Image (cartoon, rainbow, N blue to C red; front, side, top):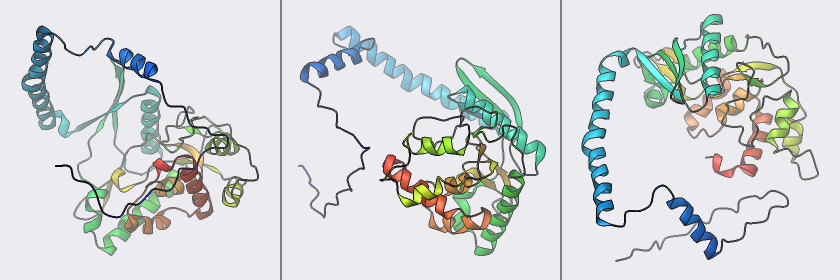
Length: 313
């Protein structure tokens, strides 16, 4: 029996379109058949009895042999070296190199707790960092259990660590780039270019998808993108999921996931801390460990909603 939803229907607001946007025409039947034919090349569906038998045999081997062996391998790893070593895999060598350099830069010049890098390598087209495993709880899992006093202690620690990070001096002048001077790994840069950008104006132009100021540019975006900020070292993703704490005391044991780190305008850390953050109990504390840049965040949120509405919560 088919069940249909009969409650109130809420229609999402129409997605804003770029100037000059025109929808793509619907594909013809011939185009659909050609596309289906291309998809089947190299992986044809089983048709004969022998092909079906081979297909089922592969499935059973995967289910009853490969999967249990992989599970056993993972369990043995967690019981041995995995207790002390964390392996992080990257799809791009540039991201691996940027995070390695960020961890080493912070560890060597501040007292901010970060994992220790043991080894960085590439193998079989994949890129890895072997680093120390931090035993503790992610703040995301325990934040709701903490009292206001414990939360304030955590925020005070973060404020001191952010202050140390911002004392690091860029060797690249006004350029906005990764820790090693290459393209930025920041997931917020959704408009195509990841840089490096020659200066803040070039980054702002990229955030506007290459459009100059015009009569339809909002006052908030025009004002924020007319400002200039000092270039500082930026973690780029200070969120509860990237903070490991001692569960009983709330002492911060490590600030992790530095793949988005780099040299950015001073307001960027504040914008990224708000970006896609849903927990209002955490948002209320952001202004206590980061210098507020409210005007810049309002402008960046407008651009996110206009160009990339699916990226916002």
